[in-house]
Amino acid sequence: MSADRLRYVYAVTRPFDGVLPEGVQGIDGEPPRLLRHGDLIAVTGAVPAEDFDEAPLRARLEDLDWLAATARAHDAVVAALSTVTCPLPLRLATVCRDDSGVRRLLEEGHERFVRALQRLDGRVEWGVKVYAEPGAGAGAEDAPPAAPGAGGSGRDYLRRRLEARRSREGDWERADALCRRLHAELSGLAEAATVHRPQDARLSGAAGVNVLNAAYLVDRTRSQGFVELVEAVSEPGVRVELTGPWAPYSFAGIAEEGPVESDAVAAGTREAGR
Image (tube, helix red, strand yellow):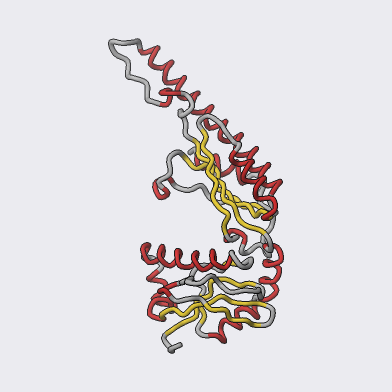
C-alpha cells in the first residue's frame, strides 16, 4: 500500500473458519482484508489520506452524500462478516495510520473487545419503532373542527374542539401504554435493549410520530419468537415497524454499558408527543 493510503477498520472479530463472501467491497470499492493479531482479527481496508486524514475527515463528515456512501460501504462489509462470524462493528470512520496502528488498536482495546465479543456471540440486533398516528383510528376526528358559522353555534364549535382534543389525548395514551408493554415484553426475550431518541419525521420521512425507537440484542435461537411477538401487535392509531436482523451496532460498546433506565420509554413518548 502506498504511503497516502490509511487503514480503515470496519470491525473486530475472533478468528473464524472460512472466508468473506466473494465480491465484497468496502470504501472506494476496496476489498476488505483480515489482519490477525493474537486472538483477534481486525477487518480493514485501504482508504485515501486525502479523505480520511484528520483534517479532511472533519470536513468530509459535513458532506451528507459522502457520509451516506461511506456508511453504506461500511455496512456492506459488516453485513458480509455477519454471514460467517459474529463481528463487533467499530464506529464509522475508525482510521489508523498503518498496520502497526491497527495492531496497537487491538492491543489497547483487547480486554474490551473480548468482553464485547463474548456478549455478542450468537446474537443479532432487531430494531423496533412505534409510530403514533393520532386520529387514524377514529376516522376524521383528527381534522380541525369547522369554524362556527351558518351550520352551528359557537358552543357546538367548542364542544367539537374539546372532543377532538380528547380523541388525540386518547391516542397518545394508547401509544404510551403500548410502548411500555411492548418494550417490557421484548426486553424479556432479549439479552440487552437500548432506547434511542425518537426520529424526527422531517428527516426520516416516515408517517406518524415516532414514539419508540429501540434496539434489542436477541439470541438467534429466540429470534423467531421475538419477530412473532412484534408482528402480533395491533392497536388503532399505532403503527409498529420491525427491522433486522442486523449486526449488533447498537451494542458495540456493550462491555461498558449499564442497564437501560426504566423511564427511557416513557421519556421518549413524552418527547415525541410535544
